[in-house]
Image (cartoon, rainbow, N blue to C red; front, side, top):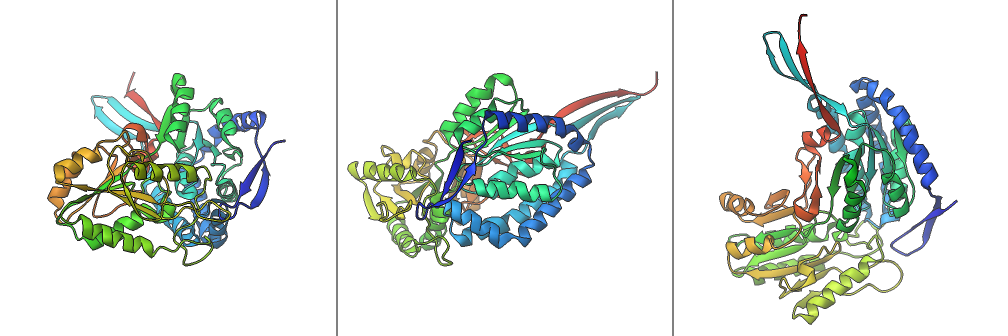
Length: 458
């Protein structure tokens, strides 16, 4: 039997070696899920939601241990691990409060003995290939509404957050969800490929654009529901009427939180030339105050990168910028010693010939570019193949709305950044993916509509 090694990214030490799934075990779990799903869907919605309530209570009761597990395997600073788990609770509350109304049958016509109704029925068996950077958020965005709406879930957590994935499955089983209805698969890309080969009714993936493209090619000919949340190169524009210090404090956190490993991290910043220097000075000062260290430390802000290969990506982006004339104001180096460390890095005098302004960094690296006016900022913000989020800092809401209405992004921010709400859909444009999660539409995403034509009498 093959195994999956879990290593601590802070020091490279082996945490545990887990037995991994293979093609045969994946197929067996898929067949069991298919057999068990109808009975799960037949249970009253109230009973399925009760399982989610019990799951929520277990997360609260075991939060410290769950946070420690996530920090140990991903390197997320412990305070941020707690933040993720605490932030999960209102998402669960949203699903509990909104699910019944979101999937309620609708009568859209009733006249002359003819009734027309729309019913929302489960997709069936859902495959969820999830991400490591926010394993509770990203996993539960799919798992919880999928289960609530009557689906069975085949869940493959990232190989970089497998222990957390197993904890999610354990707590759901203890909360009353049958094991066959919520199956966790252990392994790397080969297990994901085996999952895609199964008879499933929907595929929900969060991860890189390259992997998302392979998944789309693998399932595209089967006409199943496909949702892909992929990469981003999320821009923010700071106008000349913004407070440079306040904007710098907000955006430094938006760029560096979770060591820059957020799907909606600020990845490039455009600043009006009138306040550029003041903004940069304040930004560098804020970043200089971020403590990099052991992720179990309560005062640690910058932890290790979860994935070792990303060190080379960041180093290459910084070197490419240097060679093309950029200036590195702070950081820019791989950390010494064991573990996956990269210094928080601020680069100026950048332009769009540089990889740092075009390709996703997914680390504590940011490029800041000076612009002349709104028109140049809009042009540069749209000069990308991605479109996940974008933001504007200005006291003028009308101006912010005018700018953001011209920017191609699934989510837009005025005077804030790096924010996700369960009440709003999470989606992307272009190479940032297709489909959505969250909001009432993210509940309905796990159903298909069934049209009823009902004539009374003979």
